[in-house]
Amino acid sequence: MVNPHLPLAPETTTRTLSEGEALRVERLSISFGGLRAVDDLSFAVRKKEIFGLIGPNGAGKTTVFNCITQFYRPDEGSVFFSVWKNGTEEVVNLVGKPVHSIIGLGLVRTFQNVEVIQELSLLENVLIGAHIDFKATILEQAFKLPRARREERSFQKKAEEALTFLGIADRKNLPAGGQPYGVLKKVELARTLMANPRLIILDEPAAGLNDNETQDLVSIIRQIRDAYDCTILLVEHDMRLVMGVCDRICAISFGKFLACDVPEEIKRNKLVQEAYLGEEEA
Amino acid sequence: MNERNDSSLANAKPALWKNPYLGFILFGLLISTLPLFAGWGLMKNSTLNYIGSVLVYTVAALGLNLLLGYAGLISLGTAGFMGLGSYIAAYVTKDMGMSFWAAAAAAVLIPTLIGLLIGLVSLRIEGIYLAIATLCVSEILLKSFEQADSITGGMQGKSVSYPVIFGHTFNRSTTYLLLVVVLTLVMILTHNFVNGHKGRALHAMRGSEVAAQAMGVNLLQYRLIAFSLATAYSALSGVLYVFFVKFSYPSVWNLTLSLLVLAAVVIGGLRSIYGTVVGAFVVWAVPDLILKNIPVLGRINGLPYIFNGILIILVVMFAPQGISGLWQAKFARKKKERENGKEAE
Image (tube, rainbow over all chains, first blue to last red; front, side):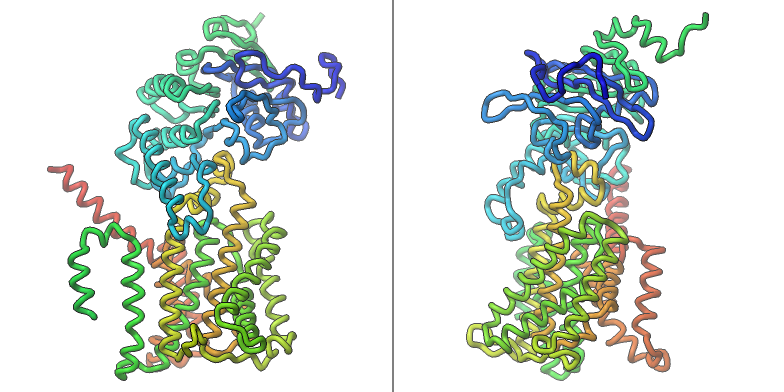
């Protein structure tokens, strides 16, 4: 495809991350059939920022998330992400990496429709978040050799801390099946915390929550950012939450970039207003 | 012996509920006393044979439960791998004259490796297609058993003697005890495995593939782990079979056996170790030991199949979590009643 803005091949990754950026989505595009779900989209998330991605229904927000976390392979574009490797910071391009390797780089996500394991207890669900940090082999585990026991103990402690942090530790041994939606959302959050994330991606964290729970969520998201020292990228429909919690917001419509700014400016932005409310009648 | 058990039980009461091994060991001790009854003439020797083979099949069913219950994958190849294990064990001890341990190791490792290779090819597909692929493998193995006369004895089958372990020649009762020990060990190891992080990864894979991937579970790797484990359990079950029954015929390792193993898992309850044991007893012991003795009805041809078929329908319709599910539901209800009672106060 001829791209008028970018004369060089995208492989020349000279523009990766600027100072202070945690994640940069660069000229990202993906099509399904004839539909261009994400169209030449670029934005950057700064470190320790709570960054919102908004847009009307079908704008392609979740698709962007899936392209970042490699559930989808974007047709074009790059996703640059800052990782810690042996004590130094390094920039990697996530595109093309296996889905299951993403968490190891410090990028964890939640899902729009909570994806928890019904048959497991809340604690066990949270422990799945530490999966990649378990080193014991099958035999060590089957015979409960010291390393397997030690790991299980220490990660259980960590999971309990995460559950306590989110205020649902009293339910830790109950099966996830049958728990209220709000609790399961928190379980997903706790699960992401197990992986020592550098960036957490939240896909509609307030969907299905009532007003009180949404208010709680604002402070929870801030607390997570501060206590776990990480960056947060979220997609959300609930405008009160987005405007209340986000440091900066990127608005998209039909897969295209509209604006990226602080919440007050986004509210005032004509393009964003049109995208949400339809064009003003002449 | 009984007295000592009782007193230790009383002393260890709080720990009994905490330590899961104790349950398995008690279970093992309980079923290991059965040959005594046979020795006293309280139980027919044939009954002991039936129960022994149920224990053998339970090992294979536990393997399938790992695959189906935890990983959510289905296999109809159980019987083929059981047969393979049994023939290798027979060949290594009888034709090659090697020890029981060498036979057991070869008979578990070789099928597991073959299973791994088949898994690498077939685990990219799921659901019914995987069932068909494993069924094909099983049928190919079955045909091979019939044709490879020099190794398997063809249609005549292959006979072995009771195992010789550490210079001690086993007889039927001691071989039965060997089955009990192996089954108990397998139950404990399975328990540890499914409650550890790899077991949780299987859970995650079944419950939500996207969540599993997002949490770093490599789907193909964990499907392979589950599939190889199920194969290893099947092969081990075949080894136990051939040393207990002392014979291996091709006609044993057919689709019916694979389906019965599946039935045991479903009826007993997915993801339940004790449930699998109960399921195996229901599927294999109940028709042979109880139904056959019912007048008139017991003489119907194919009664076990009718019985198991009806049971599967009932379980699928009314108790999708199997017998263990019914038990747990009752337990959960009682607990809830207790908690409600507490809250009311």
